[in-house]
Length: 167
Image (cartoon, helix red, strand yellow):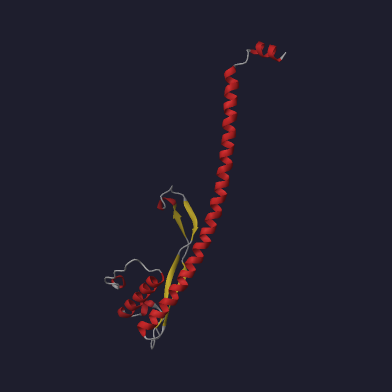
């Protein structure tokens, strides 16, 4: 009966059945691909969180190590006193994606940090880097450069006019 009704309606085109099977196979394939992409997205987000935590931990450990060595070198150069690096949180700013090579959408809440250097020179009441003389600034910057190179030694180090940026 169904065949007769189909023939009365105009018949069945065998190409339609073939197309239906192809579309069904493509749908199954794309469903699998979508599942794979969702799994990959979940794995990447998890990896990103893990890497961010590890980066923060290693960064804070590095700053502590540099701080310790910086204080030792500062005391050696100045015959006492002390020096300390402090991370300070600057105002957050909006970053445009085109700075990152993408479209011009804005990323909200991009935090920026800066470094503040606190010094305690023996026999002086100076606590701020801005109040140091040129020679004292140069010695402080050299102590910081050497502290960083002690903690993470470069293959070689060439210093030429280390205090030029302080002028």
